[in-house]
Length: 212
Image 1 (cartoon, rainbow, N blue to C red):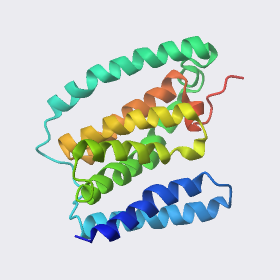
Image 2: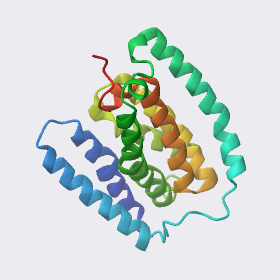
Image 3: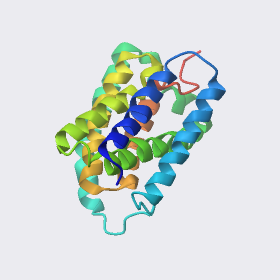
Image 4: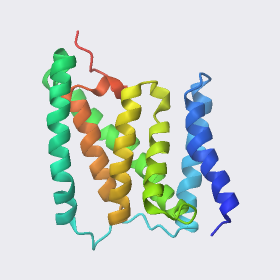
């Protein structure tokens, strides 16, 4: 285990400095380069220092997992449908109804290239790495929600920051309960894909959401 000073410096670089820099306008290829470098560092660190095997847990209680998120997902489904219907009814289910092929492609790409890497970084790496530093678990989850919201600062959208903070709290508690990247990735994918489905995808820069 690294020293607390080293871990705090690492935390500052990866979870404060890097996401804030993404909100600043400069060459996209530079951003892509250091994001990939950071992700490789995280994967190597998880494998070597934290002994993460990247295998699906065989003893996970999936029944309790699905029961845990079913009620919350139903509330999100109802609330977001009402929100889109009131605020932008022309967007309601626009993509699945008008471009089903794009809809399926985006769902798959989003899970593989956005949700899974985010959960590796913001849940698996964060909790396995910094639980030693922030030993109070509610505080640990709260900090995780803050930095997860900060990771979406480049969208420059207040609603996105609020939603990702709430999502960060939910996903943080899920990871602590199950210690499963797979479980928390499924939960994250459900909510993210639903936002795209219901018509809120423009907030998250999904293509094809704007009605003609």
